[in-house]
Image 1: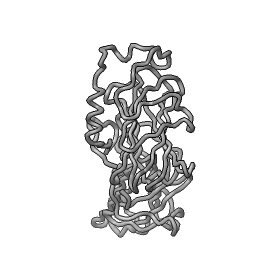
Image 2 (image 1 turned 90 degrees about the vertical axis):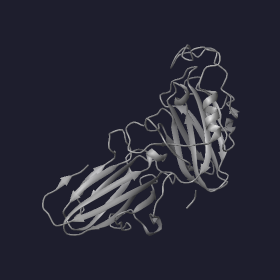
Image 3 (image 1 turned 120 degrees about the horizontal axis):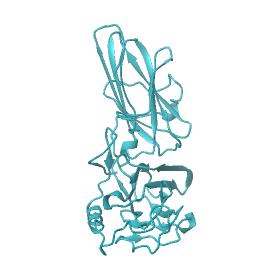
Amino acid sequence: MVPVLVLLLAACQGCASCYTPNLGQNNSQQSNQNSSNDDGDDPSDGAGAGGGTGDLPDPPPCDVPEEEPNDARSEAQELPPERWACGFISEQGDIESFNTVAYEDGWMTVWARGAAFGSTADLQVLIEDLDDNDNKAGQSWMPGSTDALLTVPVDAGTEWLVQVVDDQSTYSDSHEWQLIATIDKPPVEWDFSENENAGNNAIWSGLPLEDGDVVYGTLERNDQDFWTFDVPEGRTVVDVRVHAWNFGSPADTRVTLYRPDETVERSKSTGETSYDRDPLIGRTIYDAGTWALKVDLAGAGGSPLYWYTVEFGLETTAPDTGAADAG
């Protein structure tokens, strides 16, 4: 598989697993440079969100300071890989546009940040393949943060439009942002992938799952992926965990379990809390036979960038009666 570097995010809220990229020394240096206001002024002493900006402070030190105007695609600045861009959301509807190139096959992380240095911006990041306008994605928040991050598979040499906006359409002289695009290894691991060529969009067409399998798939617009698993006689506990949004995927997924008679046993689009967009289902079942598992999008969008993995567990004990919901 193609090879983004991830690091556990401390103080993460509302999710089972939350990650943010570890971008090495450059990241640490940039954070130190922007941890304080050199002139001693309170950065919130402007007009505030939605008001006039007055005189904006100079952008913080970075490799690619924004140059206005850069709202339009035709005005996008070049952002070399592994280099920081920076600036401010300075007016309502402000769009910060950049072009970057994937210099090798791998996974590209695009990270727009501001929370670490006190920015009041609620950042959203959007990316689009300049050679395939349907291959695009966006993410409006990282779990537990007002930053935004996308981690998606890319091919060497592909050119990408990267845009940063404020998700609430607010602006001020404290709406500071920094942006980087980098390539590294996948944020997750898996055993095997869906076989789209064989067709897995019908309920019994999916590849079979066994206890301990971790599988990978992607969801295009209006797509649905099916997987199957066999349940023997007895009391069986099924555990399904999706890894996507919390690892940088734009996919806001939903998981549905189908009984052998094709009726729905359980459908869920959240994890351990309502804020966690990676579904988690734990279910005790007693109906022997072939069951189906469907993964589709609970939210909008869809493209080859909308990836997910499913971690699957299946444990059967002695025959029993009754049913219980473990989640």
